[in-house]
Amino acid sequence: MQPKVSNPQDASPVGEANSQLELTQVEVLPPQSTRTRIRKPRNLPRTEPPLFVTKSMEMMASGAPVISATQAFLKPPDWSEYEQDRLYFQKQFGKGRYIEFYVLNKQKHQADSISTQAEREILEQYGVMAARLHAVFATYASLQSEPWKEPFYLLGTDLIKTLKVHNSNKFTKSQKLKAIADLAWVVGTLGAVIHWFEGEMDLCVRERSLLWIISVQEYTQAHVDGETEELHEVVIRVQPGLWTHSFLNREGAQQRKALYQYGLIPKEVFDIDPHRRKLATSMTLYLIQNSRARPNGVYTLESLLDSVLPSNEIEKALSDRRYGWKLKDSVDNALLALKDSLKVDIDFDDETYPLWLRPIWSLPDDLAALPTKERNQQLLGTKWLPDNYISKYWFPAKLTFKLPSQIQDCLDEIEARRVKKSKRTTVATKHSDRGIEAQSLAVIAPLPAAELDGAMVKAARQAKGWTQAQLASTVGKSVSWVKLVESNRRRAVDADQSLLRHILGIQ
Image (cartoon, rainbow, N blue to C red; front, side):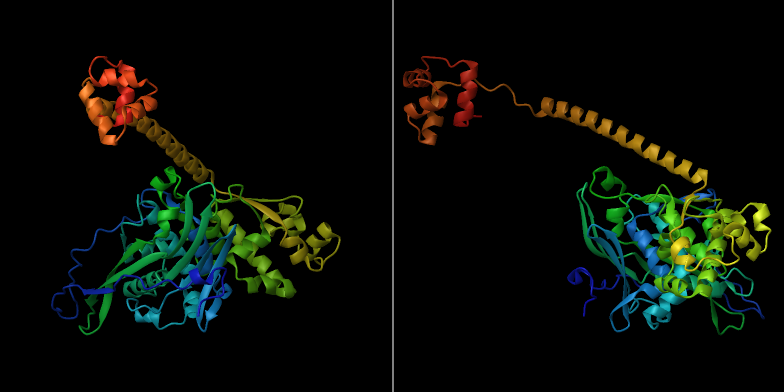
C-alpha cells in the first residue's frame, strides 16, 4: 500500500541501502593481573579531521533536503501513516516541489537496537540529537568536490566531542561510543523521495535517495574481567546520497544543471545543550540552515515555531491559555540562548511586537524590574493579558534575526571568490576554446585541393546519373559550358570550381 501523497506512484519507501555492518575486534594482549594492556586499532580508514579545530565556523550544505530533513527529525508527531506503523513526513515547497521522508529501519544491515524499534519510537527518542548529527554530516559533505561519489569516515571519539554526547563523567567512553553508533544508524534510516523543479535551470529531479548511507565499524577491547567487551572506537562511514548531485554540485551549478547550496555553521551551535535547551537547539539549527534561503531573516513567531515544533504543541497553545503562557516563556528563553550563545541580533518589530508582548530580558531595565502585574498595568492599562493574545498578537508578531557579522562577512567573501573564479574560468575557457580552434584549423585544415580537370567533373556527374543538361541547370551554366569544362577546353574559375566540388561531392 502506497502513502496517500501527491504522486503516490513515485512516493514509495526507498529500497534497502547497499551498506554492511562490519564488527571488527582489535587484537589484545593477555590480561596481566587486574589490568589489560590494549593495542589500539590498526589500519583504520583515513578519517576526516574534527570540526572547529582551526576555525570557529565551517561550511555546511543548506539545500532543501538538508533543511527539511532537520524538520523531519524535529517534528516526530507530524509524521503521518501510509500503512500501519509505517510513517512518512512531507515538506511542501510550492510550485509542485516537495520532499517526503521515510524511516527505513527494517533493513538487514542495521543494528538490532534500531531495526527492532518502532518508527515513531526512533523519531521521538533520537529526534534532536539526530538533527545535530545530520548537520555534522552536511558539514563534511560540503567539503567534498563531488560528494555523491566518495564516502568520508568519522571517528566516534571525535563526534563525542563535537556533539557533546553524554557530556558527563557518569558515562563511560564505551557508553558514549555506543550512543554515537546508534545515533549514526538512526540518521542512516532516513530515506527521501524528492520532487524538485527549477524553471530557470535545466533541473528536474524525481528521485528516491537515502540522505546518508551509513555503515559502522565497532572496535572492541576486553574488559578488565577478561569476559565482557567494551567499545574502544567507532568508525562511521558516510556516503552522501544522490540528492547531493542535484543540490550540492559545484560544477553542475556552473553549467546551470544543478544547485550548489551552502551556508556556514558556527561552533557555538553545538555548545547549546540539546537536552536542557531543546527548543533553542531546534531554532538554532533551522535558522542557520535556512539563512541563505531567507536572507532578510524576518519571521513571524508562528512561521518560526511551525518550522521547529510539532503542530499539536501549537494547537495546544491556542486552546490552553496556561500552556500558551508556558510556550511563550520557553520561546523567550530560547531566543535569549540564541542571543547569548550565538551572538545573534534579534530585532522586535515595533508595530507587531509591542513591549508588553516582548521577553522581559529585551525590555528597558526600569520595566523589566517591575512585577508582572504592575508591568502589565503600566503597559496595557490592566493587570491581565488580552484574551486570545497568543493567536491575535503573539503568533503574528514579527522579529528579525541577524547572524553575527563574521558569518555574513565570510559568506560574502566565499560568494565573491566563487563569482571571481567562475568569471576567470569562463574567460580561460573562451581563450582555451579559441586556442584549440586555431590549433585545430592549423592542424586539420585540408591542404589546397588539386585543380579540377574535365575527367573529374565528368566522372562525378555520371556517378550521380546526371546529364550534362542537369548539371548545367544546377550550377546555373549553359550546356556548352559544361561540355567545354569536361573536355578541358575551358578552365572553371575558382568560384565555379568550389561550386562544382560542393554539388558533385568532389573532395
